[in-house]
Length: 270
Image 1: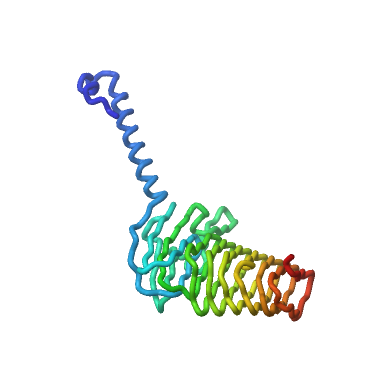
Image 2: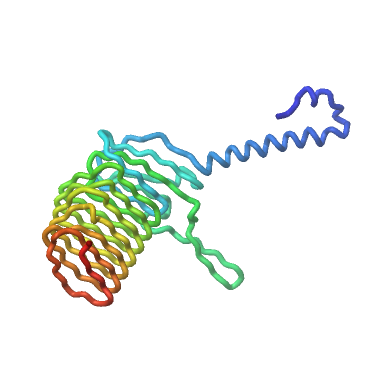
């Protein structure tokens, strides 16, 4: 802090003027760092949303879902201006996305001499976390490399999960008649408990899927690539696979192999 008594005692023509300027510069530096900290991490108040039953989280957006009586959203963001963070509800679908990154992140081009380079407009330091309260949820779609967590047990006649990229998805539990999961890339998906009578998995790439704790009666697996799957089937499990996938199933389901090409491992859990 500036010592004002000390300043008043000074002769402005004396050599002490640099000391005064130095104190002023310190205050300016402190204010700069306070403002920079506010920009790096900030949080919006919770906002009430129109009714929705589907959610899409785009690149750089992590999402935390919890069941409640009133749909709402609260955003926490780092290293991005708040006006570039968007959300909207259309046709009962809640979409959360950044400017120029609704499906994939737009690239920026620049030149260095005769060489031309591209890089994403947002680097990995840009992060947004959306805390979303839902009343009912039928579908969840994740795009990018972030995390998606549902802390409540999902309940729906049919539930669809689509994941693109390198995301990590953790669902606390699910109760449904029909479950459809589509994974593209190198994602990690876990459903920790529940029951879904009919389960359908379409897996492309090098994904890791663990739904062994989700009781299923009839399970269908199509795997293309080098994925690892743990599932549960009490009645029947059908498998079609290309590549080097490792498929492990629990339960008393009868195995029905379709077309299997490559070094695919299909085994019953011990």
